[in-house]
Amino acid sequence: MYSRSISVLLDLAGVTNSNKGSEGLLLDHFTWDKRERMKTPDGDFFDVDWSLVNSKDDNNPVCLICHGLESCSDSEIAQELAIACNNANIDAACINFRGCSDKGAECNLTARGYHMGFTDDLLQQITNIHSNNPNKRIYLSGFSLGAGVVTKLLADLG
Figure 1 (cartoon, helix red, strand yellow):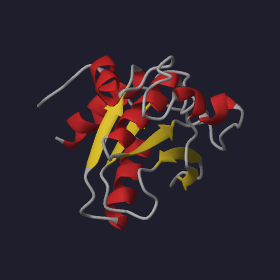
Figure 2 (cartoon, helix red, strand yellow):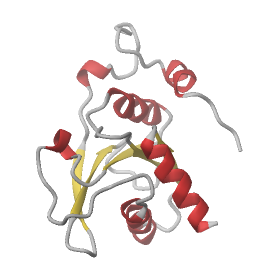
Figure 3 (cartoon, rainbow, N blue to C red):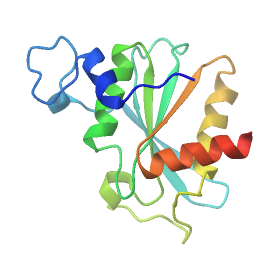
């Protein structure tokens, strides 16, 4: 397994807050391309924000980004990783854990919240992507609590 720190990846992709001369997209101007609301089997929902390399090409690999505790797709680190992924021709999708969309502005429908051991929504998103495009390569990335969710899911799946 090969790993690099996020700062190295961002440097390679030419992404920084003050990097006004970069040919890549500046964080100051980043917006997610679309939001997808996923209904869950227990009657709740979570939102997934997408940054697509090319909206006409469904064959690009995708990196699922899992944010940290009390964060969301609005966090700089999630957006910086999305830019780095797009610069590498990889679509990015940030899963907003339950109750975290728009910095928690919208409450969820059930009492079930997210925590480091809660992998159901991530697995549902992976399954959804795979069922729509079985040959699509899926990468997982997580920060802080999100890294714990990714690690637990991988351990559960063996």
